Image (tube, rainbow, N blue to C red; front, top):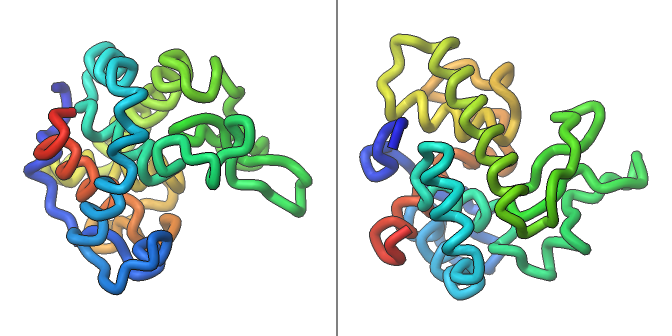
Length: 196
């Protein structure tokens, strides 16, 4: 694919906070792998769409699967409400749409919800946003390795490229303080164990 091999990206995995989603008594790469495995059955519904979009966008399907796992636990009804997620009580509205949680908040990403929440159209939109952020990080940090740029782009997908300041603290502003590290570890699991 057009970006670094996800298996070559260094990761510390999920934070204790993220691992608590499944009341795991541990954190790190092992926790990310456990979370990804829990979502693996639901992920199979989306396999052909994920592979198609990955091929179209030049992004490893395992990375798309990992973001779906992280954002919505592979479309879990406990996370999504008719395709919507991240309810903002102050606004009285949902902030994000679909399996990959495209930011529709006018004060955030400001994107429009495209396609059905679990459609290839939605996955293509969200993956396009990811590619946009990877490219922004490449331009912002040209001296970073391709693996570092990919990880920075994943962090930017969660919090915007303006919140990525250094590689050593790439997740300092991300949800759970671990977004890119957790996504990378989940992607590595999907690639190694589920042939995404």
